[in-house]
Length: 284
Image (cartoon, rainbow, N blue to C red; front, side, top):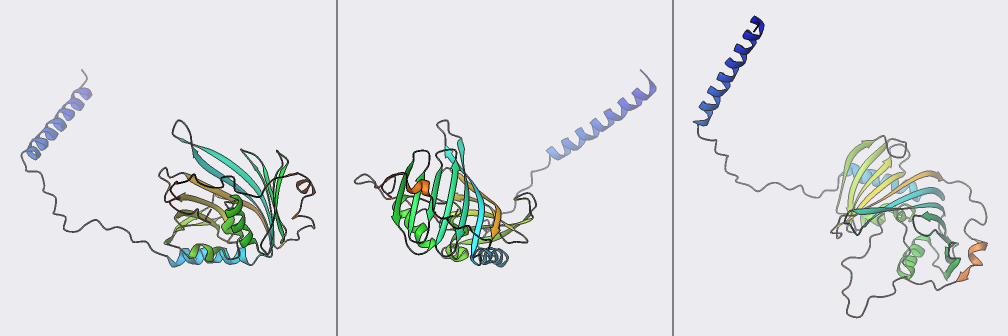
């Protein structure tokens, strides 16, 4: 055994004795008594932070002021699988809008594709794969048409809050909380401000362009959903106030398809069935 190793071993033995001595001394002492808790834990109160409200209003103003609008929306939905963990399904919508009374949505999806046309007088829902079309008279505004399409035919777009006449006013009616999170540089290829808010029974996290104030992502969880499934929509390729070609809001192919009723796919609940817990939110 070398002198160096004997010295190192002696040092280790000395440290071991010191630790053992300290442990023995501590074991003879009574354990400290935690102070009595005189008050209940504080719970953060819901708040409407001015900075978050300012950003939501700025984004709303930018969208509402646009005479025409084109963008791409990619929405992802979680759905329970038979094994338990959720699966994700995705739709991609090419959206064109002209205020106050024209809208086109061309959607491809993990399921059937669909096309939606509104020209201020009629609304047309087209299933190109099945060559089926539903046509009905429509209200004179985009907002009223979206409302009617949902109630009559179960048609809903996850980006609805971005295309209504007053996006902030639509969520402010039941706004419960709103707070600023911070900035991100990885969503949408631009710097964004992250804001969270709760309205209409939905908790939403939004990514809003720091410079252009356009929404880039919305991620939502419904309060009454026991599985807390997540819904997300990413919005890109924004073009505001550009020219829209004539004929954008009509389709000869769709008009010539086999007609079907413009009706809800699930027209009613069985007799005696309980009503749903809450109405679906307009929030994406």
